[in-house]
Image (cartoon, rainbow, N blue to C red; front, side):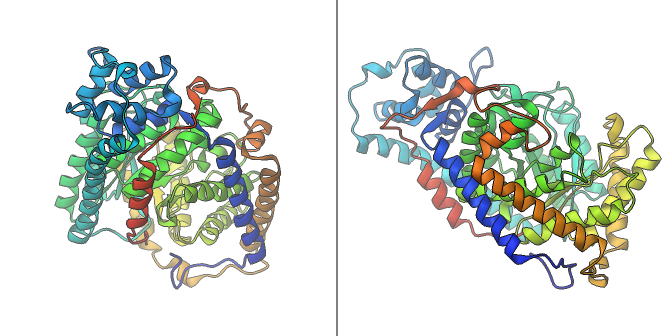
Length: 530
């Protein structure tokens, strides 16, 4: 996806290859360590993909009730699908009703007559075919809409909405689309990542954002389709697949046609203290689902620079990008779906800071030429001075277009004081579009000097990233996280929220979705982001 006329960095190819090899070793070790473990979140996602929807009178999802029941009886290690499809082989009930019958003890799983593997697989096949068909239709609709309505060239302008009320979010989103947004991200209500269930239905109250629910996904998807058709371009929808319900969120995003999802276990481990085994297990399955659905993931390396120094810690961002890409490959995800994250977060008082920012941005593009890298705006050093914030965002926008980023999260001038005003977003989009238009072919006019500030900085960051990856390959990712190598934050492999939701697989563990999802991911050979 690097194009003719793009700025190029004279980076050392041997070091680049070494980083790729080391990150593959790190990813393989993660899978070796966790390959015989499952989690309550993963198993709930399996049930959702088998068609179980809805919640009880108290708002507790049926998938939670079902998994809690088989966990209490010591059966989760065989997989939720083992029990659910065994019941389905004896029943004509729809998936949600079947789950409810098990929860209410109208169907006693322990008392069911023995089911042959063939009958269980046949029951699963019908349910899986329905879900895979739905995911495929959503993917095909996306492709057809892009052909029919068109889309802008990158950098795509990515705008957040965060009112707490899904219906107000729709108002903000439509206004942002009219102003020129290409991607709408619905920010999730504060701390939803710590809930071990997904709320049901449309929601109108949230703090710092709006609850991510299946119905809210549907509402915003429909609104953006109408707005995109009216404006003559396909508008992409983003939400979250992180936290204790990471895999379930991915399942809902797949069936409701989200286009991008924030999908990164590092965020949950480092910034929400979620148990690392739990979230790495969930991430592997979540990304398999997203690969099948053609969803572009957004990783969270930009968050490292909110707690660590952007100048000194840039190599940790790059090393994490390599590892995230290698982990995504293990989930059948192609580079065109791996939206690696980085950020424009250096101290504005740093001399030549703009050149260092350009070096880091170019390095991400050069190391991952086929990945749609997501570039985040300055936040750490923003204050109530909205005029200076606007200047910072303008330099960020210039760096974005000059280094050919693909996904450009628009900086809002009131970011530092968290004022989600609609007009602030309009001004932010207008300013970014101005810079992108005014400097459209900037990259074709300039080449970094081999001995200049940009090339020297990039070489240093790449070399340090290789050194860190060497350490990760030797120690392992989980031990390295305990050492505090990322975001200056230490986490214990045995600590954190959700650790009790990790369960060893039984010898006859069964997840019938793994092969169909992988086959669908391989089948989906859509075009790269350009």
